[in-house]
Image 1 (cartoon, rainbow, N blue to C red):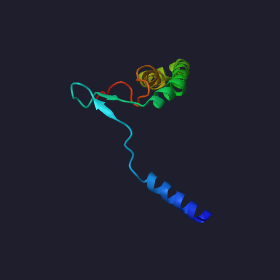
Image 2: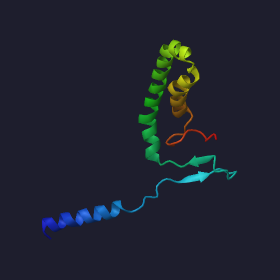
Image 3: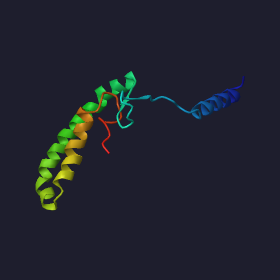
Image 4: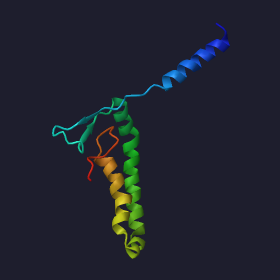
Length: 112
């Protein structure tokens, strides 16, 4: 087989495989059957990546956000948005670092 035909065959197979739908993530609902509370089933590589990469960055972001919140506190108090600043700088990264299950993409449960 000529090199040109080999390259064309590889490109055709790659394009065909990339067009197939991916069914990778599985979500199981809880015992109550309420779709608001769902439990993800992350694969092992997602858990390892989350433990080694994401969690240290999220903890560092929580610490940096806490420092930024304390520094900006006089200005946010004058502006009247202390609660919003605290939520976005401290609570949101802290929730993702400490409440989210290992390897999951959402933290805790949805509150509507």
